[in-house]
Each structure stands twice: as structure tokens, then as C-alpha cells.
Length: 435
Image (cartoon, rainbow, N blue to C red):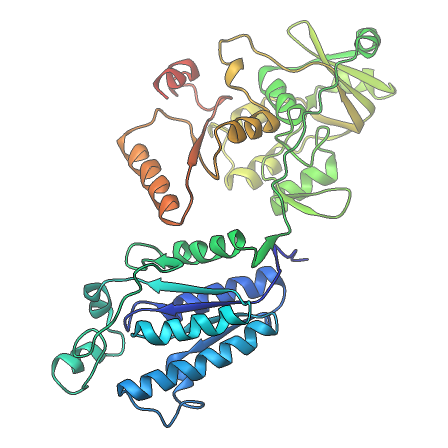
């Protein structure tokens, strides 16, 4: 079920003025399409488009100064009515004269209504280069008289409430500028907040002492990396190793469904394996302790065992089956059984004492760092190689694109892959020093 992302808090008129071809209608339609979905209501946002209005309400008006003024006066009144009804309305009109725009603005202000003069500021060169309707070509040839920007003036807003240069922004980027402005002005409010998953590790001396008396399974390095992923909160909604149903959903659908029926993307099988003799020895136990390098880290409560269908897992995850595949090799070396349980207790945070533990943040620790840096946007990049010039160009350009969208302090979250990759990969310590 689609959850609404925003709530419309009040009416607003976004008056989009700009040259023909600047993208007023295109931008209005893109924002409406997005808000229709994210508000869950296709009747909250309306578009008053200059070309369409001239075929109906303003059909009898021409392009003289007087007719242009009347065109704007009428649409100012109509947009005011939508606004008063609590609707968000986009007025996509060239509206070339300051006097007409000011008249519409004052009409709204006198009624205490939100009016945002928005300059769609693509340059004449950009607009003429687009010329989808061939109007500039006709205007240059003298076929269309009094064409704004060619043979008739356009009085660009000197201090618009919002400036959107569609010549420098993608359509998605320009849409985000408008939506960000709506949030800042209280026209929209966010219904969703970023989820910050808490660590599952609960240190308890009494439980740890008890765990050390339980039957134990010693796991390998790849398994302890999975254990760390779950315990630190990175495998949400998992709170233990995958059971058989979760594993099947993950490899077939690339998702895991939580206890509330909500579906989450999770395409990596996070499982724990044991050998046949371990399964036989442990299948009657109520609790099993998990150890790594003589350290006890967790307890599986009410363990259950199911077949480790290695070929199926490899085929579904990697789309190919070959014992030579670098991802298949560690899976094919696993035991014959997988083990999960009703629940798990995580008693100690996993550390590797390799000089890299200081970089292994939990979701909460990253959230705290983002707040400390006063970031208003975060862009993430995952990499298993040293950064090269192409990476840096991409990351710098991403930051500049976010700034163009109105963000003040976007920061980079770099995610170097620190677990097992391939034997010939650049070592993690060397990559971290380069990063």
C-alpha cells in the first residue's frame, strides 16, 4: 500500500512566469504528477496553463498590452479562488509585465493568501534552442508579431520569491526546488521521517555469563560480518539470522516482510550455517551461543534448522551458477544446514581490532554525525575500489546539483565495502588511507 509522503497544510499560488519554452507548463505538470502520488489526492493541485486558458475563459483576448493585462487579471482572480479553497495552484503564464504580476500578488496578499512569484529563468538562448512549437522561428521571420522576448518585452522579476533556472537543472531537480520551497513555507508538511535503526546490542553481564555455559557454535569471518550487520542495525527489519521463509522471500523477491506486514528491500541472504554433525548435536537445544575467535557475541533462542540449498541461493542471488564465481565460492564452502531461531540476544558489539573499527558506525552514530555537521542533505556512494578521478567528478557534480536544488550543506556519506570481496581487491586499510 502506497504511504503518503506529504500533507497539504494550506492553499498557495505559485505564479510561474518566464519566456515561451522556459518550461513553465512542463515543470507544473511534473510537480503535480509527483504530488498527486505523494499526497494521495489528485484534486489538491491544479494547473492554470496560459495556452489552455486562452482556448476557453480568455478565448476572446488577443496579445495587445490591454488584452495581456486583462488575461492576467482574470487568471489572478481564478487562482485566488482556488487558493481560498485550500488548493495548491500553479499559474503557468508568460505574464511578461511587472504591473500585471504585482496586481495578482496584491490581490492575494490583501486576502491573506500565499503567493509565490516564481521566475522560470531559462535564458532566451535556451528557450529559443528548444522551440518545440516553432514559435521563435516564426517570430524571427516576422510571421508572429509582438512575440515576447523577440519583438515584445519581457520584464523579468527583479526579486522573485523563487527562482528556478530550468536551463541548468534537470526536470527532477527543478521539481525538487519547488517542493523544497513548499516545505519551507509550510504549504506542505512531511508525513515520513527518516528511520534511524537502533543497535540491537544490549550488554548484560549476567546474560553473558549464562551464554558462556551454553552449547556453542564457532563461526567464520564471513558469518561474523553478517552478525555485525544485524546487530548494528544495518539489516533492518532482521533481528536475527534469516529463517527459511525470509530467505526464500529475499532470494526470490529481493525483499523481507516485517512483523507488521511492511515490505523492505533486502536482496542479500543473511544466514548462519552449520555442518551436519553440529546440527545433530544442537537440534534439541533451547539456546545456542555464537562465538568468534574465543569471544561470545550472541545467543540464538529456540533454534531451528533448515536445509542450506546452496545452488539455489547462488543461482538466485548472482543469476548464474558456477563454482568459480567469486560470490559462489564462500557459499558452496558452507555447511549443509542453516540455523535461525525465535529470537536472538546480541551481547557484545563485534569488533575486529584491525584499525578500522573507528569507521564502523551504527545508523544512530551516522545520524548524530550528520546532525553535528548541520547537513540538510546526504548523498551516499558505495565503492569497493580506491576512488579515482571519475568518482570524484561524479561526487562533486552531485553536490553541485543538490546546491542548485536549494540545499545549503549537502554532505557525502562514503561507504567503502569492508567485508570480503575478492582476493585481488585492494586491501581495506590501503583504501581507507586513500579515501
